[in-house]
Image (cartoon, rainbow, N blue to C red; front, side, top):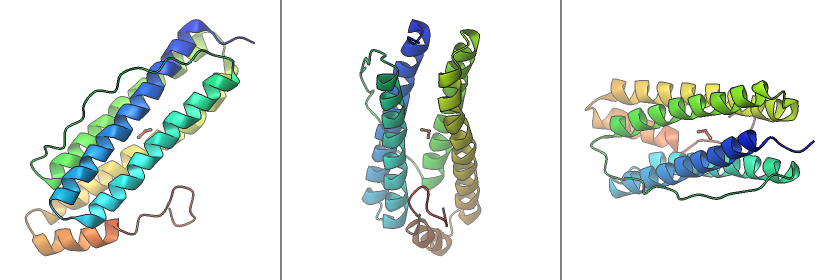
Length: 170
Ligand code: FEO
């Protein structure tokens, strides 16, 4: 069954959101590299790669449904952060906005009884719960560390151990 054009547009928009998130996380890598927090930079690089995978999943799905792909402009991200906490505040807000965006695509697919899209989006809904939780928890730890540089360095070492998505320890 041909994909509804409104659902197609919404998925195209979502591909752009995921690519925008990927680019913003890459800008966060730049920030962490600048302040020599290599563990945080490594963690954010993984996050960047995950977002590219999310975009790729949606891209492939739309192709599989015979939809038309329309790639849009990715806005310029900022690497200009005042603190580590500010990075994670921004990341948490981005993930919350992304959840809202996926919910919109879901609602649209529901309106037109597009069960295949609903099924595909289920993975993204579950993933968003994880992503919001991770950003929220990390923000909590960074705030807890506060101005304590040695606590921040301990955290930096932990961040360097982030496994790939899907690994048992992940
Ligand atoms: Fe692709 Fe962070 O959600």
